[in-house]
Length: 202
Image 1 (tube, helix red, strand yellow):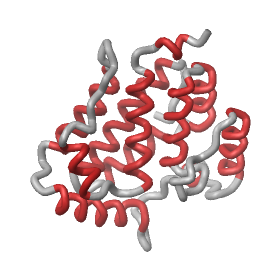
Image 2 (tube, helix red, strand yellow; image 1 turned 90 degrees about the horizontal axis):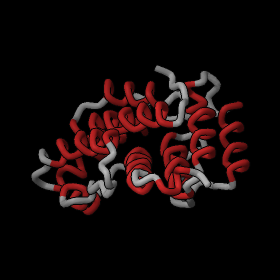
Image 3 (tube, one colour; image 1 turned 135 degrees about the horizontal axis):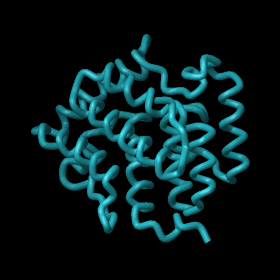
Image 4 (cartoon, one colour; image 1 turned 120 degrees about the vertical axis):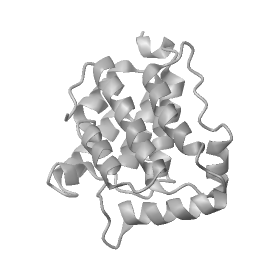
């Protein structure tokens, strides 16, 4: 039996990876902002997961700055467009871009990994298979499934660029939310590289 199935941080980690996936795919709307501010960042791990606490701490700091969810959602939509959509986005959120073969072999490789692991991107994700939002959602699924070797395989094959991505998002962000997202992503992947004995691109 995998020790991931009894790890008390599994549900917490899946929740956090799913949250990061969602906000990289689309900016949170006003109701999502209100939910995050009003307690949607709860970490149910017992005992507490230190990396999860650091990730949530960064996002909680942002939540304390929000006075009007509707205005904050409008600001986040503008920043998300500038960072990730464009017409000339500050960043590309694709593994294949970081591998310097944009939408080439690395995209095919991650599709192959999804097939080998028996998972598929959710229909709500419109991005290519190697987009950060899709890969982070895949990690959430793998944590929920509870197979340590599958998580390790995916991190080893496709997690190598996450720390660099987190640093790039932090550098390009102009406000506290996406700075916090970058800090949260960095904290989680550094912890999981160590936990699963995987080398990151640091």
